[in-house]
Length: 316
Image (tube, rainbow, N blue to C red; front, side):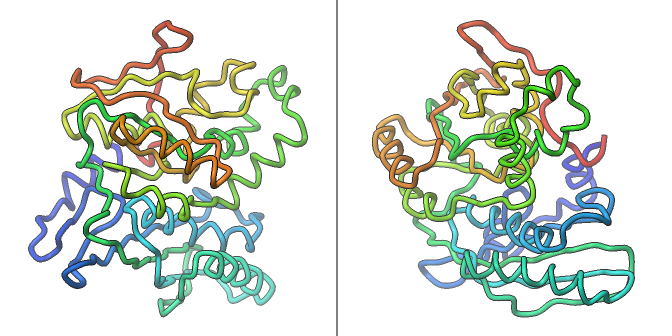
């Protein structure tokens, strides 16, 4: 049983007053006639998402950034955060660095920390984030349409390369430059959700999802879960040339932790979206199309390409 099966079996309660409940990057609750509140939560646990030697500054940054990514994917503006922190002992040096990283991310994205909870226990960081989203531009996974183009906001695979570095065969690992290694590390510890771009592009977009569990897995939540399929051109997916030269496409597509946005949009908006990507100096691209075949087909250089897995799973 993976985490999605678990949620559907035990926790998929019906929404009574919420406008959108379980099943998207954030829940939506009515704020006024023009806006929703968008609310989401993510948790980082010791020995699963971080270790005792993880830099607390970057841990503070990432714990907030992964939540911001959920609000960005809904087309919203992140506003407020609540922090629940479990630690074994209140170590001043660790807490100071953690708070500094958290504050830096909050400042960059204009998020206020307004409350939370601290307690003694196995190290765990859980943040609940609240944002605003205009009803006319809300981005939901179920708004995908047939023949939509499928887009990525930026390159994928860097974070997975860092996380899986020790599992890469030596002959391939020795071709990783120091520059690439640095970029992979920065992508893993300091994700930068593309808030500015999505705010400008949201009126051009039909549906969106943030990439936390890998492109291949997250793509299914937009397509297969809504009765559609997709054709993806791997040669169009933005990634560092190392993945192509070493035939590590699967790592880039399934490794996860990218925290970029995968979105769909009508063909007529192609030029406008490309112009915005250039304006924000992003390496995003159109990578495929939504189809009615109810399956996802990958193609590399005109030939079918098979993935042995479809993304990161917490269970199963």
